[in-house]
Length: 138
Image 1 (tube, helix red, strand yellow):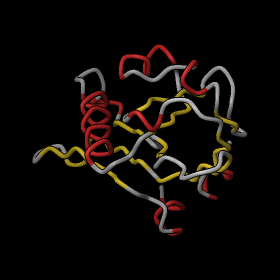
Image 2 (cartoon, rainbow, N blue to C red):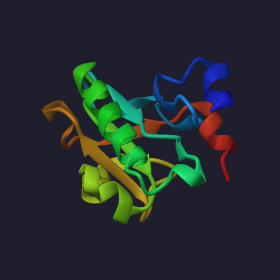
Image 3 (tube, rainbow, N blue to C red):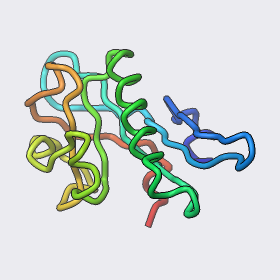
Image 4 (cartoon, one colour):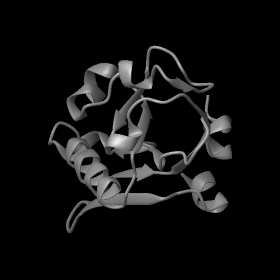
């Protein structure tokens, strides 16, 4: 998160706080660059990171952060969201492996999913350029 912030690539971020418990969770949607097809590439973001304190899990907080974040991205004209995560969790928001099949990424594989937020985010063949701090992740 600090790397994204330092690079100026944090994009949309939401936090969940409780008056007595403090910061409980956060989600960020850093912008991505799509290269490939002629024409204008759709506006795209990554859903990363998503974090909820262990003692605050199982309350629906992560789901609410993701849903509100995706709604804000859609309202901002974002056409495509990408996530690298557990399919059993992210499929509930509409992410799918099938939607990512047209994307080339160093993270492509069984956990690389996409979600079209607008019609221009569907189809096409794109190479995904992730923010530099992503390369530092193990």
